[in-house]
Image 1 (cartoon, helix red, strand yellow):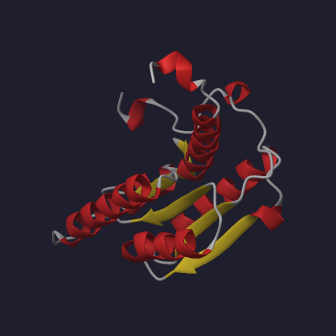
Image 2 (spheres, rainbow, N blue to C red; image 1 turned 120 degrees about the vertical axis):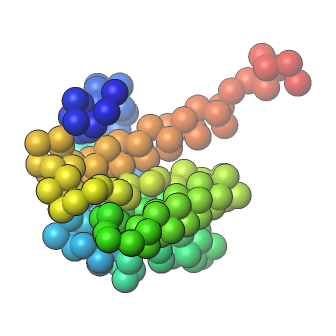
Length: 172
């Protein structure tokens, strides 16, 4: 269903458990900060709601969305993290610049997540205009920052569940 018909922040929070000493990094792009800071703040509030203390959250800022994957890589190489949340906003312009940036960021985040074995969450908006961005950063379609935090929480729990699967039950 398209986001114009669905509130992005409507996720059944009852299915998400509280975080147990999880360490999470939140990386925010400064470009389009009216949008990204609103998303970051909602993300941090959501992590706190699930009992992730501020001292377990590393918060850094990068110049733009393009720098999100490399910052995530630096953090994963130097910190023991359970998840990294990348927050950014690339608004369509008059040229194809947004497509190149969006594709590179999405690819970089996915590649890093697979290579590291840690959840690296794509909390990057790719709207056509500023109004669409505002609608998804606390406006009529919710806040993508909440969704990014909830995704990280779900993936942290999945990682913990996978570690505890009885290997005899899966045929090995």
